[in-house]
Each structure stands twice: as structure tokens, then as C-alpha cells.
Image 1 (cartoon, rainbow over the protein chains, first blue to last red):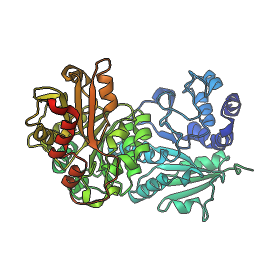
Image 2 (image 1 turned 90 degrees about the vertical axis):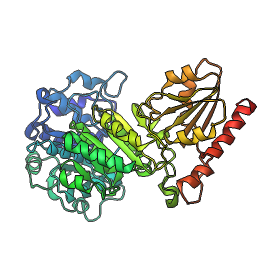
Image 3 (image 1 turned 180 degrees about the vertical axis):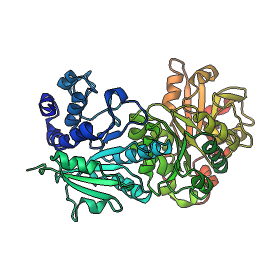
Image 4 (image 1 turned 30 degrees about the vertical axis):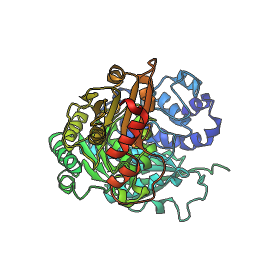
Length: 217
Length: 292
């Protein structure tokens, strides 16, 4: 259903590979893991999902429409004047969107703050997830958040979609850039593998590297 | 002022569970008791200013009220995009409290100067900017900021006036006469000294944003001089808007754009930028001519 919904979206073909690479992870998050519905979208103890990789949010919008957060007919006008759906998501305009992103390297720091705020308020069962791209890891701000989350340690889950689009790659592997984190390596299209990774709770920050086909393949 | 800030913020942490403090190593020593007492919401992220603001944005997204603190060049200049996006674009707020604005870190050189912090925030929407002229003005600013979720910048300085004016939110007239001289924060004492025998009106404010444009329009009678402790001309646009339609001449005094490659003290730099009493007097007399 989401795939057909995704096809409905036009206007951001430049980011189509980014959107398609994230689709399965976002589907598994919303269909199997996140404790959030349109009715609980403002509850303080809801699970949080932040799309740090704001590029290519078509998959995100498609899932939000499928899950009833936004009307499906919004999808027909992405990026147009008077549309709430831009080619980067805006939390002020879109129900269910936790963070307005687009400029890379912001979501992980925000997610650390969200997880800390939830913990400080006693929402210990509430989980925080943030999705990044492997190229987005080039932004240095991510590494401030990666190191701090490990130092605390802070139990949040970061999913990195690895479509091998980082300009200089990640010699030694992406997990090597997350010292102190626990790690799951999953097939980014295998829903059961993705779910197993998302359900890991170790008391430490957890990294899921979701491998998909190379962006330039 | 820093000591007052530490005491007042520590008290807020004790009193209000919504209050959070995020540091990037700066002042962690003086906040050590608070960091120990409230480890869940008094946080030191290390020397990571981008993260400090990002964490503040995330905390605010969960309903907390974060206070972020560092030297102005690191808190504002370095983390500008996080301030723009992790706070403003998310439609959340925080209280940013800086030290080291302009040339307070004189001996450290230009890497530690920030004359442009208020100008940078002026590019963004919805910031209240508070520039206390005396440490006794600080606690009320911090406490008022705890009562809402808006975006607030409090600029603490080494330079202080001899007395506090807690009612400095609007333009407060301290001397009545001819042309209007507006002194922002710690600029008041040097302005009063510079104008002791000049026929001018002197008004003080510790709240340059939102600027009391209504008060300015009422007080200005053709000539207005604004003296700010940061980049000269930062308020020029607002003054122009305030006096729109009124024939007027304006002079904007503040820190110059040219980098002064020297060290010393804040007093040395104030003198070099013409912001000591003697320098201000020269500028005022040149602008006002023999009539003042």
C-alpha cells in the first residue's frame, strides 16, 4: 500500500533514491515498533521518531498517510505553493512529524535532547529513534552527538541507511564511527531483520546500519 | 554578572523541574554543585557547542525549559545554524546566556570576541535580547524567562553601571534635555559621563529586543544617538522604522567592524572603539555640533 502511495508523490525526483532507501525502515517503525497513532501524536509519553535525513521525505509522507496522520490527497501537491508537504519535512505544518529537518546533521543532536528530556521527566519506557543517511555522517555535528550519547550512556536508537553515498566512504565501516554504541547490521529491505534491530534495548545507544543498494548503482 | 547568573540558575533548577541547564564545558566548574544535584537535567555536553544547542532544542521539544550557556563567540557565532534550525525552525525556545560578548575576553584575542552576536540574532525571528547593565538586573531576567517558552538571549558583560535599573525594559529617561541618547546596558555610565554637561536626553534600556520603538518615537525630537555595547549600527534598522515619517538624524555608536589585533583589557578595547566616556563625548560633539 505504501509503495503505491509513494508512487503518487511527484515533485522531488532529485531525492527519489533517498526516499526509496528509507521506505522499509520507516514502514517497520510505524507498523511494528513505534507506540504512536494519530490519536496519541501529542501524548507526552509517545515514542519519538526523527527523520534527520530530511532529504527525500516522500517515503516518510507515504507512511504517515498510510497510518492516518495526514490525508492522502496531501501527497499530490508535495513542494507546491499552499502545500504542507515540502521536499523537507516541517514539524509545524505536518501532524506526526517530530522535527523539521533538511539541513543535514541536526537530527541526532535533537534526538539526544529529546531522549534526555523524556528521561528527565520520567518517561523511561518511551523510546527515541532517529534516521540518518551514510552521507549525512559527513557532517561533524553528528560526531558531537555520537560521542556524548556514548559517554552518558543514553539509550536511543539511530538508524543509518547505508546506500554508500558518502563522498569518501567510511573506511573501516560505519560502526567504527560509533564507539561505545551497540550495533545491529541489517538488510535495509528485510522487515524482520529491521524489526529485530529496532527492538534491541541495551541501556546504551544503539546503532542500526541498514544496508540498501548503492545510490549510484 | 556570571556569579549572579550561576546563583539564580541554580535556584531555578532547585525550584522548577521544567528547568534544564546545558553547558559546553564553560562554567562547568562553578555549576558543579548543580551538575551533581540534578544530573538528569543539568548537563555538560563537553566542548560541543553545536550539540549544546541541538540538545537544548530537543529538551524544549519535550516541554522542558533549557538554559544554554557559553562564551558568545561559541554560543551564538559558532552554533548559529543550530540556533536558527534547532530552535527557531522547530518553533521551540531556549534561554541563551552568554559571557564574553564583544571584547570582554580582550587578552584572548579575536577568536574569543563576539561583537556580532546581537546582529546575528537579528536575522532570526522572535528573539528577546536582554543586556543587563548591572548584575542586580540579571535574576529577574532569568526568572521571567522561565515563565514562558520563547527564545531569549541574555548577554552578560564585565562592564557594569554603578547602579541597577530593574525597570529598564522600556526606555527609562535618566536625564531630560535636547537630542535623545539611548544607552543600552553597560553603556549607560559612560554615556552619562560623556554627556554630563551636554544638553541631551539620556534614556536607558536593558532590553534592546524588542526595542521600545514607541518610547523612542515619543522621545526623539529630530536627533537620536544609540550607543550599544556590540556591533555599531545593530539597531539602525529598528531606529529607522521607529522614526519612519519623522525627519531625523541618527548616529549609531558601538563596536567597530575592524578587528583590533591587540589584547589588554575590555577598557582598552572600549577606548579603541571610542566607547569610553572621552570617545563617546568626541563622537557626540562631532554629531551634534556646537548646539549640545
